[in-house]
Length: 419
Ligand SMILES: Cc1cc2nc3c(=O)[nH]c(=O)nc-3n(C[C@H](O)[C@H](O)[C@H](O)COP(=O)(O)OP(=O)(O)OC[C@H]3O[C@@H](n4cnc5c(N)ncnc54)[C@H](O)[C@@H]3O)c2cc1C
Image 1: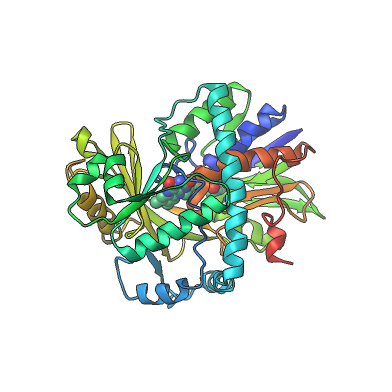
Image 2: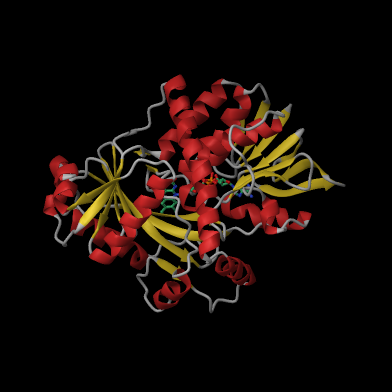
């Protein structure tokens, strides 16, 4: 079967790879000149199946309201903007803030994230993938007792779901990560998530894209998708600035651009961009840099060693599709990183970046069929797109091939928003 994959981020490339492995003829279309040039470019570098707690939770509306008046807030919601898409998304987000929904959404996200980590490991072993990966687990650190109590409760919930988590007091935390001895702020404890991993998502996507190309996947770069052409309940082609591309089946991996392209088909896809930032800097003192990825749970910042680089990422700003880089939003990430690892890098010499996370109101991606028989979705992976990429690509490839996916896809499809 000929399959067109729309979007060459980590989700599109993983989907194309899985499809080509199952014997399909695959064409990948992207407006950029290469793979992973947008949200998959410089993310936090974590494969964190244990980080699937949804954003929407009972305490969040109150917290988000307080943060509205704080320029450096980790989650910035600008409701005064005239943006109907934001308001609609915000209402759906609020509807997901009940304890019942938190539990349901957590289970769904964990299902795809855990499966995906296994698929990643299998692909890595099979293809001997190298992307500056580290399999030494992730550390969560807490600056105060309240954050620690919340973190320990989350760890217990994950243990109840079968994940390995180790609760650490301050001494045990410093033994796990000696570079934290240089921290200029008090730390009260942490949690080790030993089965999670890190690496360079951009390099991963490039490497997998090369394997896919060697397996006869065609990449059509610098090609802007203008519209999907349909007849009754089938897609008949993709209108692009370079002409029409036809296939037997189509997979949407367009992240935050998904709603705009699917709206003319009458499909309401609740994805809104949550802008995040990162900094990357060469490591200047090996012993002063973290040996594994550290998440500062009090500041919502992820700090990861990627080869000889230090990457720190965080913040979410719900303020439309604007991709401009605001130094004021990056500053708290740099400050948090410097306060934990003052010797790790020269913080005046950083590579700044920002990207739009494709966020759904329930923090669960949208994967599976649509009312159009040959149109499939693999989008809306929010904060955990790399973590979920390989598994999401595999299950969509299975669906298109008429195979039964290895995990239950109930609750992951677009129909959950229309039921
Ligand atoms: C600061 C930050 C930190 C993060 N940290 C982590 C982390 O540690 N771990 C993790 O798992 N996830 C993390 N994420 C999330 C993760 O990066 C994303 O979920 C993931 O990259 C989304 O992949 P994607 O392929 O869906 O999107 P993208 O990589 O954005 O790919 C979509 C592609 O569609 C193309 N496209 C869009 N519209 C068109 C059009 N009209 N025509 C042609 N092409 C089009 C774009 O060019 C793009 O290449 C982070 C994100 C951010 C912003």
